[in-house]
Length: 162
Image (cartoon, rainbow, N blue to C red; front, top):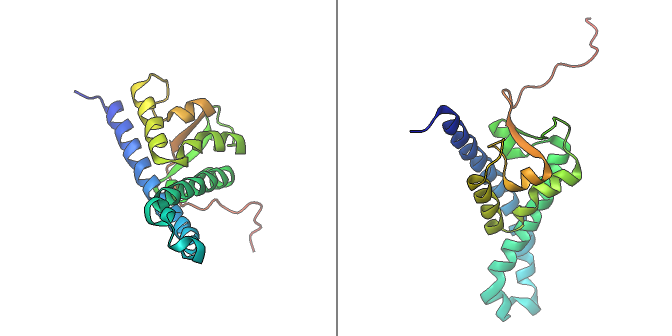
């Protein structure tokens, strides 16, 4: 029998998966836009590499784009587009703003999806105080939290009534 805390963790992980799918579609389109022209170059178009191994190169390009995308966007916004849509925010475990180094460390496993899967599985089967963390989150000392109002615009500062 599962407790409500276990249920919360599963909801959290399924929501994070949905956010990752949204971000994966965005980065996949970017990767395809960059990869497709490379396969049309005359010297490469009919090569053995393109016919048999191009899909592998595409996935590594996609992974590299994901690492850059998540590192840059989380460093500036503390969230990605998918996370923002579902109401998540990334922060350091001490509550501080995410740094570039921490963002890169927590996202490096996204370079290739089997590594990301292992990253998530390790956290599922290991003990840790924060069940919302992937293994790389534990190393980077970051966590993904649910914020209540993902699209609420903060009130303007120092407004003078007219």
